[in-house]
Length: 284
Image (tube, rainbow, N blue to C red; front, side, top):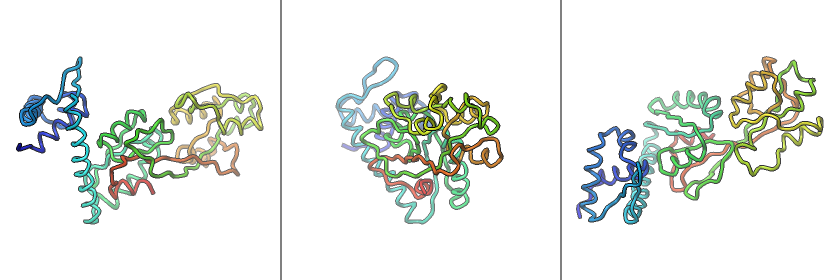
């Protein structure tokens, strides 16, 4: 059997994308060409790789065995490319990173700027969205590194390989610092991100000084939390990289300025993947 690796790659992408249309967009190759290559692979193998289910295609039982081999083959190729980059001492090419919205918006840009000074041939590509969706892309090898605060159940194929303490502040609009009804309104997020959450340490701390404090507004968008605090809607716990400048400029006030509050930023990758030096630079 004379198997063509390019045919395997096309099959692999179609299986990941669950359809020829999305695979065509990702590969930037016309759909008929991809269909033809997959058909040639099926002819070589002697069995069907896909069956049609509604608008999508589903990998057959035999096709799934081929897919699992493809994961190992192309995962190894990816690791080789990354290792060669480290050996040559030069980082270059795409750097695909998934990040929670506040990290992508407020934390990564400064790191990317520094990275490009050291490695101008790197092409950073930043993806943001629901963690569960991004986990799938990391698992499929479409994204190299994930950066999150809240992580739902992590698939077995992925690993939380590192954490980093990020300073947070419990903030209120400065001119409302003594307004009781604002101090008693906590803007929450974890009860949306994870409905099984039962304890809210920051809220419990707030209640030591204001016993009637409770969650009255919720959003899982931390950038929106900042804007709501600036509008005088309540109190929120926010990372220094979002509100540090607001505190310095006197727009917001840290309710507990002498306490060092931190939460962990979590770094996620595939268990079998070796990170490129460019990706590792973002975890320092």
